[in-house]
Structure formats: C-alpha cells, structure tokens
Image 1 (cartoon, one colour):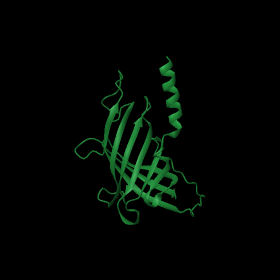
Image 2 (cartoon, rainbow, N blue to C red):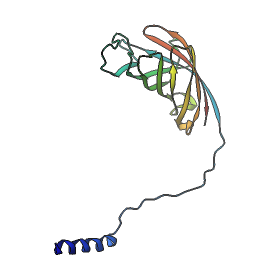
Image 3 (cartoon, rainbow, N blue to C red):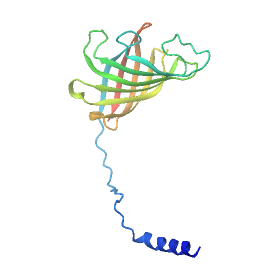
Length: 184
C-alpha cells in the first residue's frame, strides 16, 4: 500500500515535467470578403436506367417485405449516379461535364427524392470546377428547385439555386434541363 502511494506521488510529480512534442497551431486572421460573382449556367443532365450504358444504379435497398423490387428505384433505396452533362437537349450534344452523386428514395413516397449531386465541368473556362446541389427533389413535378450548397475551383464557397425542368422521360431515359444561378 505504501509503495503504491509513493509510486503515485512520483508519477504525479513527473507529469508536469514531461516535454510536449506537438502543439496545436491556430491563427486568426480578419475575414475580408471578396466581391461576389453571379454565374448563370445552362446544361442538361442525361440519365439512363438499365442496359449496358446505365448511369444510375441502385446500390442499397431496404429488406422490407412488400417492397416493389420490379421498380428500378424501389422505396427505401439509394441510387448512385454518374451521368453526362450536355450543352444541348439532343443526344449528340457536346458533353461538358458529369454529375456524380446519390439519390435517396425514402419510404413509400418515391415521388419525392433527396438528392446530392456534384456537377463537375470538363470544358471551357469551368474545366476543373464543380458545384454541389443538395435538396429534396419532388421528381414528378415538371419544374422544381434544388439548393446549390457549395463548389470547388472557380465556385469556391458557392451558394445559389438550380431550376430543373424535365424535358424527356421514358422507362429508361430521363433528360433534365438545369438553369443554375451560382453566387461565388
């Protein structure tokens, strides 16, 4: 008992003398906002479900009895996207980037989808830049709006909104027109 007490006192006296080899570093500098720019973008998202050139794949789904497994996007599922962005409506239009991200189909209401997409641009002045959208997307409405929540490259600290208009919809292809206002 006495030895344990002596050992505890020795350890307590030695702790303050232990050298510190790593230091947390922080520097606070005043924030000077840069002048804001507004960029208006217009492009088309081209999604394909199924087949050899599918741009959307279900990556997770709930194991719930009664789920409609015949649907490409059943309730309680998560879909991954990697779809081209084109300059025009036609299938032969120039590809100017790609959209990568996720859609979550919550519950039995598959008409409302939670969307996170990153639009990466690969042509022109925006090459290497991207914007991110994250919002609830009422997919059955022809016109809808998503929030721009960030960006990189020329769109650092971006915010804004995207107006969506479904231009073509079939059982395997969807073409959505995006009119995006980005403040950066």
